[in-house]
Amino acid sequence: MLGGNGGIRDRNSRPGTAAGGTEDLIQRDNDLEIEKLHAKVGIIKDISIAIGNETKLQNSLLDSMGKEANSTLGVLDSTLRKLGIMNTSGSSNHMCYLMVFVVCVFLFLWFFIKYVRA
Image (cartoon, helix red, strand yellow):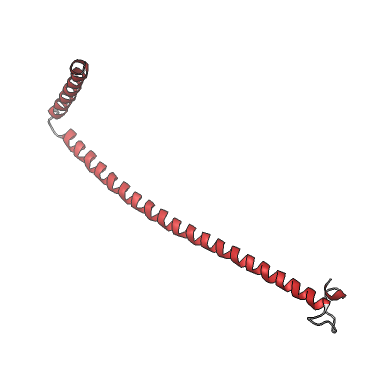
């Protein structure tokens, strides 16, 4: 142990003696370990700050995505409301015209792909 007395320093031991030299060596080792620990704590602090900054950025991105989703939902709701009004109106000819138009477009595309490109 230190000083030969179970860790208790001798009254006669001085920093220049063997027991004092051992204590100085242990103190220097402790200081070196403290410096290493301080460096590691600094690295962990930097990492935690970077994680906090990334979390704030991700939260802002998620908030903007939520706002855009709400905006899209509003547009979709408005479109469905307009389709419902059109459907409940007395004239169902709009749907027939739409179906005929879609069929004509598909027939035109089929004809174009099959005969014109060949």
